[in-house]
Length: 639
Image (tube, rainbow, N blue to C red; front, top):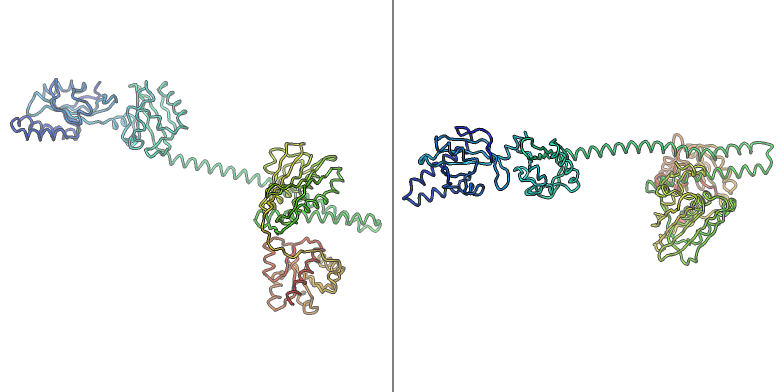
């Protein structure tokens, strides 16, 4: 072993200087107390317990060594002390060795030592030392002792023979002797590769890896490894960067979210444009039909057949617009959680049969074979008949729409235990696998050129999914791919506790309002006059008002049996009008007929004092039935 640094002729370490003075005093007692054994024993005991490693020796022999010395160096004179020891004994000089590199327990250690000649016996010298490995290596690496450092030999890169106090306090004995066990398993391969490159090329390397603490937690550290150019050793320095790493990760995640949000916003903007274009197309097409056939009706030379054709086209176009509006409202209600179903006992077999019969003309028109393959189903289920019919109509309409002439559509109904399974299968154009996951999303056909060729907004399946889920059922789609057909499968639970059925709406006969006086309040003259004409044909006596103020005059003058009132009117809306009417004590039955069609508007209308809320557009027969039902309920309440 070798000593590093030059010997000094005065003690430069106060701790070692103090230890030398104490041990010199103790040795003086030991040497002069040959006859007083107790005093000598006490002095030796005190020397034995001294914390600083110390020994009293001559040129060849260690006469006394305390426990701290023996634990590290045994009872032999260390090589690094021999040269200085000879000088001390010969000249009486005090020598301080600022840095000594030696092996202790097969591990390289840095020491600082002081040697002095015993004051009472010039044949003896006192040697004291302390370890300064941490500070020496920190100084060599130009770091503080608060930084975790560990080291080993170049020829044994996986073996750590030194780690400083900071490393030991952080990781315990994890680093000794195989320091890689402190690495996170996911970081070991890349670190070992970088470490090997450093040892071979003697170039520093820095990586961020995770090191395990004594409590088992892994924390991120910036670890640098340096290969010494003067000694065959490597040194690793670790700086905790866990919080910085987490902040970087959070910042990266935030940037990713921002980027994704921008992408989503751009996609949503594109989708909005596509949806608006689709809605515009679907609304403009029937409007165009209405306007063109309206011109036919105005033509004085049009024959009766052309007029009938015009009326039929106008009816179909208005119905198409009504369906589009209804679908948009249903999707909106479903998204906001306000789509409701009226659950009662129903015959699902009958509903499937009726839906199949209703779709038969469209199938025949395309020369498509439509088959109803349902086994005998004995019993009823709990469900909303009109909503389930809406779902089946949509599935059958889609199957026929996307099936080429000469194809086949099959509807099947089976009961499996407590579950009803309805399948609508076709031999049509099929569904691409990538579309199966999004087919039930609103406007899902917006990017599908094939679907666009067939028209529609892509709302039917989204509404169907919402309705089936409200029945605690499921709806799934399956296709083996384009041109290989598709299959829609509904499952509905047989069991269920239906609520008490409400009175059936029914359809009133044409003269159901005979002699009933009706006041129609609407600021739109066209709506007002059309309602008056149709109600008159249904047998009613009709009065009209274009505002709330005019309606009050009519109420006093004609005392109607029932009122039909719009909501959105200038000066005073329908809510305010009905509230003031009820506040005055007038209890005339009133129906709100309005384009405000949401459930919130319905609740507000009923709270304001209306007996019933009816959304525009409305089928006239249903309006007549609603009038008759309100009047009937009022008569029952009166009796």
